[in-house]
Image (cartoon, rainbow, N blue to C red; front, side, top):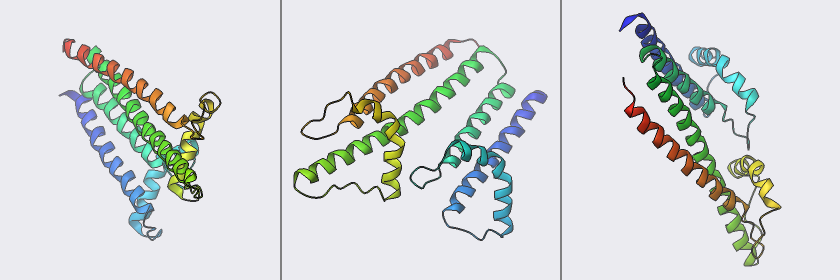
Length: 204
């Protein structure tokens, strides 16, 4: 395996354990554990160096802290990067594999955002339906999840609002944005498939 392969294996094990520590920190934050417990203090002290920069970059949305999820994604990507470079080498196949990993991460994030757009579109349709029946609007922005969906999708929806007409008072901008994003995901998926086919043809 060689010394670089051994170092890659050790780093892979370390980052795998560190990922589980971040996940444990995330789960513990949901149950409000004793902050003075030695295990809790250990998790906080060891994961803060990674989590704090993400907290500064990604403010809470709708009262929810999503920085640990992005930190987990970043650690996973660095893990795959180091393992590919140290164990697999710096060949063309390794570089292509890394690019495929990055595109896969982008595809995952865009897919999650697509679900948020569809959820907001569903809220718009449901609120429009209840309004047509003479009932008060059904969207309650005081709920953390609903507030998060609207805050996260508003930057993308806002440019469409002045270009997409309403239909009988129904705001379809989230659905239009979702269709455009779905088309972008299709193109990205095609590119990833072509890259995977080319990677298989590369000599090892």
